[in-house]
Image 1 (cartoon, one colour):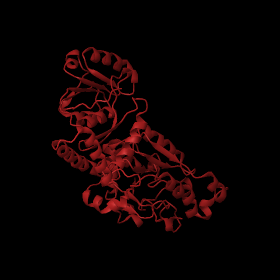
Image 2 (cartoon, one colour):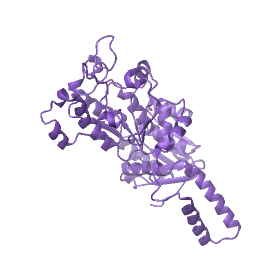
Image 3 (cartoon, one colour):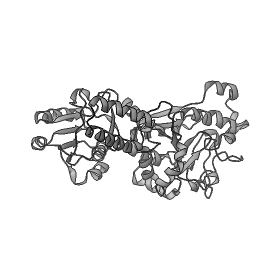
Image 4 (cartoon, helix red, strand yellow):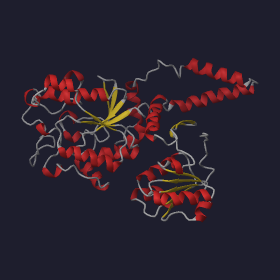
Length: 426
């Protein structure tokens, strides 16, 4: 492979597809500054049609169309349609990429981190897009927005050095010396995200929902270093859909306590397939902890707090190692400790930031979004379950009861512990 950077403003681009994957590719092209993008689809999804707007041609490209293009992406078409189309495009002189079909690709799309004019790319030659995406997220966390200004600064110094007659060897030596002096790439340089808490709150004040996730997952100290923790419960579809819209490769942590409803497990599988989530991590309790504290499986009756700790809190703490932040689905209308929940919250015990995109949403807002996006409802909701956890500690709620009244009923307990300070959770 020969890596090349192409200016998308200078070449005519074509995109062929139908579904969400094609829509994501179009968003990436537009974000890269592509000016001439023709979108072809004989059966576009509503999302693709809205994103493409006037660029959309509701048909597959004809030979005359291909003759006017330099580069063509073919996304989510059946291979029987993609193969002859790729052949025709190549015959017309186009470079062709058929997504996830290596033998039909003239080029590959690297995972990218863009910081102003600084572009970091990762490619596996199409062999493992997931690995490239994972490395991209690591790079995004290590190289924050400040690198755009750093590039401007070092570029200005380089121009001055050249104007003074310095040799190319001198330029390389002076550049390295400047980077070392600034400490930009010190191996012991750790980013404490809580130092950025006030800056994040000021920068994203007023944002919520999808807009907040777009901002935090794509730039700043949390980019590439944040996971969504989802129960795949009664209201989880909304946040899962938002995260999938921004970046379906965002890690999603699912705590399988060993006592969940079968309906929850089936719903998780349904949502993962529907939203094409690429990095769902199923986390289970440690076997030795269950053997020591809950060999009979009845700890929930005797010590419910300890049961939650070994089945949820402790596994989550381990799963979140390496992340700077995590996203939760908590909302103020759920009352109790959540009544004054901010959208961006410090978790002082771990040094992480918690993001609550739906904190200010009402139950009506959540349901309205679910209907708008035509997202399936958890099957237990229609049976009266408004908040869904383990089978042992969840019941349907009666008319007029609060949404979480069916959790740990009869006990002085309203939270499982994952959202409590460490000293209170154990």
